[in-house]
Length: 273
Length: 102
Image: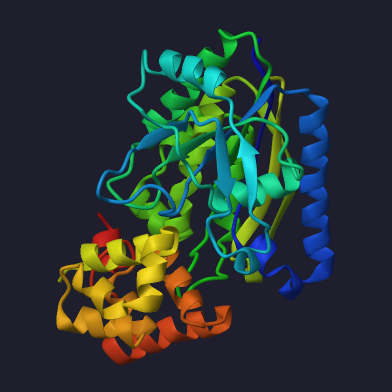
């Protein structure tokens, strides 16, 4: 089959963990956009969902840090964080080991990557899943791009990885959905937490939604770090989705900075994949 | 500096129930497992969240240690700001402005 759905969304822990402290009007509009994404995802009738995330030292550390890792587990568990802190109850999440193995083998033809049969999901995957698959009944293939511990994989290789993922999806019979989650500008867990560079985010989204590959790959990490914070380095997840949906354009379903969530909250879905 | 050791300790504390149990039952024993300077050991022990931030501990690790030690979100943010006022700019790691411009 191929890709039946592709989108991107935010994953900041404040989205669920500090929900009572946000402006309820903006928050509820954001939650409604996630729910619209859930309905669209379900409508695409996927057999599995690939979540391209940027985890935060839940599984991977600088003792052996993979730039790219794909999950091949039968079952996962999350969140790894304190349930009350994140506002999400700990659950088992089904994997798709056989499909993941075939996808990994195909991606390996052109991309170096690690795989993992054990994986504890942190907020980077659990926050999106809590909205998109709230019963945790859709098999998940987690993908991690190291965006936390430099040196980080170059943007162009994230795009190529996305292309390779797409090629792999095209060669298996299953119906596959992809959601990328990271960025956009934010300074999470630092004294600047809550700061968002909306102009930078909107310029990035313009490039992303119109599939402007060369402009997406022109970002430099030092500039991104200065203008979009260390959390901005997570644009790698969006760029991988862009590689997986080359030629398609996207629709922005929600964007607004919500300072107590510490991120420019984003929901967008690709069309014509 | 042994920032790697400080972050490794917090990484394990965040994810490993056995490390959490040692933290509860024998904190000094857990600290002794890592090669740390006395300043680092004391910052973890106190805890001096602001100093740990200035030492370069990644916030994605530090925010969980702060929560474990009873820092509510706003108190965690304030502790980092206080650390910068007291100890100066972040010394190394992802938040160090010098290194971030690489």
